Amino acid sequence: MIWGFRLEFKQNLRTKKFWVIIGLMGILYIPSFYLMKSFLLQSGEKITNEAAMNMLISSITGMTSFFVAILALLIGATAINSEIEKGTLRIAMSKPIKRLHYIAGKFLAHSLVLLIALLFSTVVSILGVLYIGGSLTGRLVGDVLLLNMLLLLAMIQLVALGYLISTFIKSATTALGFALAVMFIVFMIVPSMVGFLAIKDTINSQNTSMEELQQIQKYYTTKYLFYDPISQIKVITQDVSTNVQNPLKAGYRGIAYAIKHNMVNFAHILWLTVLYLAVGFYRFLRMDLR
Amino acid sequence: MVLKIEGLVKNYGDVKALDGLDLEVKQGQVYGFLGPNGAGKSTTILSTLGLIYPQHGRIELVGLEVFRDGKYSEDSLVEVKRKVGYMPEHATLWDFLTPMQTLDIIGEAFGIPGRERRKRAEELLKLLNLWEVRDKKVGKFSKGMRQRLLLAQSLVNDPELLILDEPMTGLDPSGIAEFKDIIKDLNREGKTVFFSSHILAHVEEICDTVGIIVKGRLIAEDRLETIKREFLRKAGYIIILETNKPISFEGTGWKATPLGEKKYRIAAPDDIREELHDFVASQGAKILTMQVKEPSLEEIFLKIVE
Image (cartoon, rainbow over all chains, first blue to last red; front, side, top):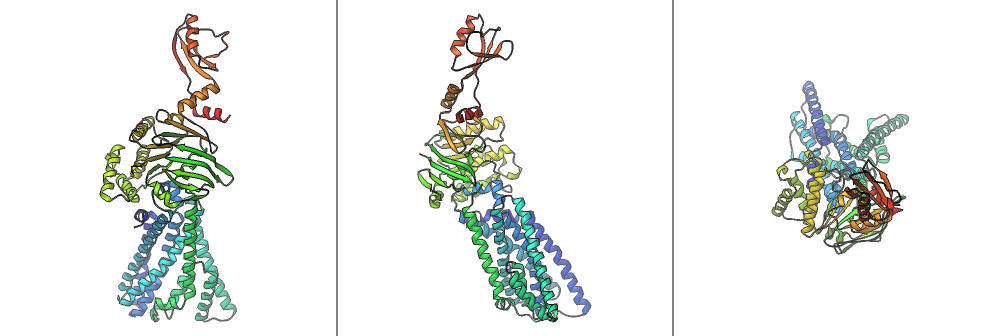
């Protein structure tokens, strides 16, 4: 085991931000599934397995893409600078450990923490789907795991972006504020503006069908939001369902199908993750730890 | 030679932190590395351990060259760190761990087997009077306890060379005395100790050699007594004299300033204590107390810089 992994893992599981995010996700899941069940009871419809899976995928994606993404960016943005401030990094690096091994241990620990947050969201989602009448099948479990891997990759991109912030901004508090501003502007406001432009263009071209709008939105997201892993994930998971507007009546295509049909979006997540990690690691290897 | 630094240069942007520093620490020495704040003490220590990247120079640590002209040899660095202990300045430890867990995780970094780690941790906690609080979280520790744990973590690997960066900062007088005793004991065990301070009193009694760094250059290196003597030779002596009755210094050529009715501050170019005995006696008076005023580190710095 790489030294520092255990320490970092323990440390991150003890942070307030981790438990606040987990708590918020838990709290928000309960009313959403309760409302869904009430709706189903009122309409007298029974949920099909395919619909259950569609709901599960959209629930996990929606919840994690917001909460776990914030956690990922915050963990990354304070990963190095806070340790320099506390002096613990100087202690660790005065021991016979290579810098690369140290940062690799940190990275693995962060990835595991995020995976735990994702699995929490997944388990709660599965319980929610069972609660509303869906059933647990082998395909569902397999697809959920695949989705978790995809989401983990996107979250790792945000951690890596956080590492970059952490190596450039010396003060952990400033880095935290900067990361939140990035999250808000780059990953929330800009995607909304791009979405708005897509709607505007659809109206202008008099293509009013939902399919056309979806296609234009997909095109805009791929082109203008390539740096936003959350938007890319949303594009990919849209293709999981045959009918995004009404998942209860839609067919289910599966995660593998969605990834295969959106390889450009998947590639965007992948190459940026590798790039951020490479630059973040390089910066750490070359930086003065003072 | 346990530590050898040649022509080390480190710039932080336009600021020259180290300006061709040369330094040598011999085996078994207690070397006091003195300098005012911002002189380059911590930069020197961090460079030695590969924690920052100097631009030029050469560093040899416990017999291995670890840095030459802008490049560290990472393998050598890892190798020498097995034989070096480091206590940083202004550091906290992992607040959520107990001292036992802290030392255990540090021992893990050295590849010490589990049972041996626990034994070593126990020894160190007992040595540094932390055994009673072994299960208390470090976050609840006082400053003195933290400093002692910081020292303990630097001793986990039983190092040949101990590098301490301002180890006594923030300690009360009894803490400082205790720390000095520990350093003396460690040196008696054969460890070489290199520690930095900006306070002269911290290095007195325990250092056999002192190096003074100002603006990134070593401007003096010798035994502390020799440095002080040299200072007094250049700056002149200040003697505080107390007699049993008032005396007159007229015609002596010494500059005497009364500090009270029978107390004087005498400035002289040389050590005139023997002459003073005769002079006071010639006036029919007796000396009650007489002492040479110790120069402060700041005074020594200023004089040497001049």
